[in-house]
Image (cartoon, rainbow, N blue to C red):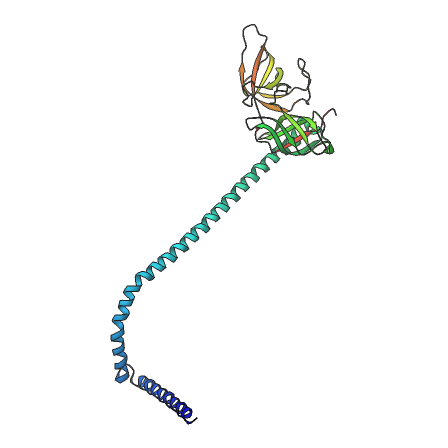
Length: 292
C-alpha cells in the first residue's frame, strides 16, 4: 500500500515539474522573441531540421507531382467522358428535333392538300403507316391504322405528302375494323387512268418495267402534245378497259421523259416520276369515295 502511494506521488511530482518547465519556456520565448536562450535553441533546431526537410521535400516531390498528375489525368478523363456524353445527348436531341420537324412538315403538306385540292369536297381521314410489304426500293403495299370503324372502304384513294401539298399514292384494297391495306401505284397490279393537266393527252399509268419507282403512261396518242415537266393527274374516267377508281384532278406526278415509239405506232409512252416518295411514307390521307 505504501509502495503504491509513493509511485503516485512521484508521478504527480514529475507531471508538475514538466508543467513548470513548459510554462517557463513559454514565458522566456514570449519575452526574448527570436533572441536569448530559447531563440538559440529554436535556431539550432531549425538548422538541424532544415537540410533534412529539404532532402525529404526533394525526395517526395516527384511522388507528389506524380500523384497530382495522375489525379488530374483521371479528372480530365472523367470530364472528357462527361462532355462526350453531353455531346451524344445533344446529338440525339438534334436528331429527334429534325425527325419531329420533318414529321410536322409532312403533316402541314397534307393539311394544305386537304384544304385546297379537288378532293376537299370529300370526307378525308388521316392515318399513320404501320407496315409495308416489299423492300425500300420496291414497296408494293402499306398498312395504315384506320379501317371500317373510321369509315374507310374498298377503293378509297390514299394521298401522301409532298412539298406542294399531296399526291396520289394508291387505293385501299383490304379493310379491317381498325386497319387497312393500301396498294401503291407502283404495284404491278395497279393501274391509274390519268391525263395531262391543261392538255388533252390521256392514258394509263402503270409501274415502270425497270422497277425504279417510276411510272409509264401508256396508250397516249402520238398527236397528243406532252412536254417534260408537265403535271400528270387522275383523269376521272375510264380509259381502254381500265375503270377509273379516282376522282378527277388528283396530282400523281411529273413527266420526266417522252418516248416515241416505232413509226406507224399510233401511241407513245410517257415516263412519269411520282410526286410522293413512296419509300418514305409515315402519314397519309384516305379520301372516302369508295363504292363499299
